[in-house]
Image (tube, rainbow, N blue to C red; front, side, top):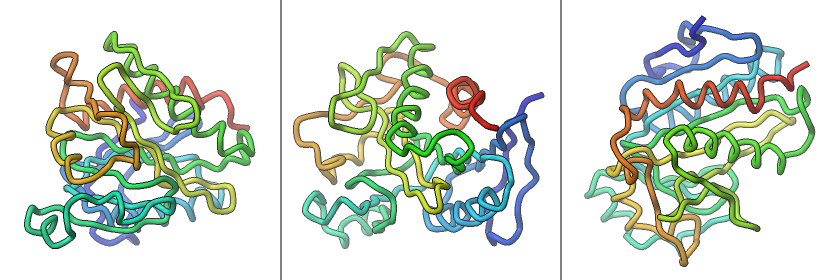
Length: 235
């Protein structure tokens, strides 16, 4: 059966949505544009559930415009003042994920895997590489080559970085995740930051190679690759 089900972004994190479930995972898709804080809160709820024994869960989201700064970042890579960002309708938040500064917004699919690494391997670096592999395999379906850059986390193309990754691991259960640029509208607001603090690379999106489906519809392609890359490891 199709193990991806749409849900309405939770107004109260104590009211869980209906979900569908595959052998190893729950896959959830938040309809519409979601606020960052409500999804962060919801991830913490899912984290508690997975820690307590529920299946590993993947939440797919398209966020309202927001700049997020991870634990490895600071305001020095912010090119536009917070006041000006607010005037432009872009929020700013410091978060507990790894990594530096990035942008989320319409046209970008954000994949939040809440995985108990005790069920597969106790290796956060391998987990990051496997997330990269998921994106690379999705891109291959569109005949786009994605690749890694030594010493950097994420996925690059000949036209720039297309996927940024930053996670937090607590009690070996992950949250936060990967942002994948689908539409050109996703990359316009990167002008306000130095993405991930990297000054020698641009930002790309899948649409740079031709028309693609609606952003949230990409969730199904990622679901298939997540099942391939991670699906056989539970147990």
